[in-house]
Length: 517
Image 1 (cartoon, helix red, strand yellow):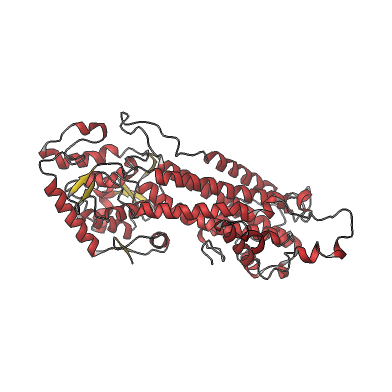
Image 2 (cartoon, rainbow, N blue to C red; image 1 turned 45 degrees about the horizontal axis):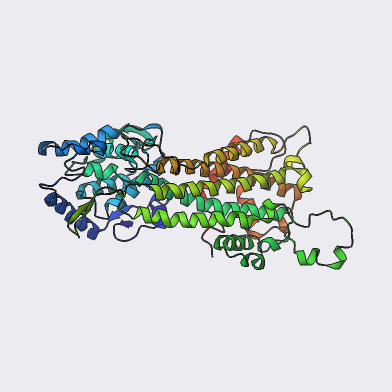
């Protein structure tokens, strides 16, 4: 079980909850802190004007709410802002959102009753997923609309996804013996006023981006291997004089992946040997194309971007991000804007740009493999059949190219795309959830592009019949993927193969991973 509220919730903890079915438990010390904080707010709010306790919300904050309407105010907030539209978030993203909201509330500065964190824990552990729409919040006051749909389910209304079906919340709660939340003082505002949608989605993005980086290194290594590239461009000696951690990390990954390969060539043995250079024109390129030679320089910044995004998102995950902050330690309530999502929005924009570049590298390596005039090793489109009659990977290349083109357009930053709204109360916003969802799309697209590249590499290996010369790591991947994507000669539809290989990449960790030493 993963304790929440006891210590910093890490990316690894988050991944265990989402992908390894680890249950969530609440730290007793944190629950005690929440109770103390709740009691402080109840006492402190008497005879004081506090935003969201006895005032309206946003530009309506100028209106004082009467004593008898204080609890109804919280219900009205949830119901009125449950106004999302578009596609529903997938269950894994909803679970990520709930974990993020739970962890923020468990910091003990939100003035909520322990009922809400206990209910959130039940939903997470019982795999009950509120129906939450993609389109809604603008990222300051946080993810208001997305989190309102969470709040709607907490009070027993709306719909949930349970066992793969969309059902009424009331039915599922009754079936599972779950009691809806009763508002105590500010649970409505504390639920919807935060960055938990963008943060939860962002954490999933980082987990998948790490996996993508590992696979990109693997496929880049395999591409170099089967075209018998020279080894110096990923050597320690070349890369260590460039003082970037990511570049040197990627170079080390490539060396580990290709250890034992009999196909990668040594420049010293070939081009620095007098017997091999007694000619005026060389058939082989003295230096490989950039998509092969500059892998460490291209993927290095991607690595560094993912590392920094993890630091920022984990900080946000473990932060108090609603407003106002109920500070029982200093005996005060502080009004401000911790709900503003610029930290997450900027990191998601940087991440999607980096992953788009990763997909562009894959597309260029794919083009190199499929263009016989460039590689001088393979038939056009690694076509193992009859040229002209059969088409090999020709049709699938169009999918890769168009998908990368979409990534490039999606890479326009949301961080600088603020639109004032809410009667200009929210006059500069983050669009953080949009940024996270667009990054999610770019990542999903990139898995598809890498799947097509991997399929082409396997066809190339079979054309060369070079399995006995490959490195152990690359040969193992060849054997594993050939189980779900057999060698083909005659033309057959490829859309199911692309999806199968894509699913493999999404759900399997590469042997040499992002975190490999």
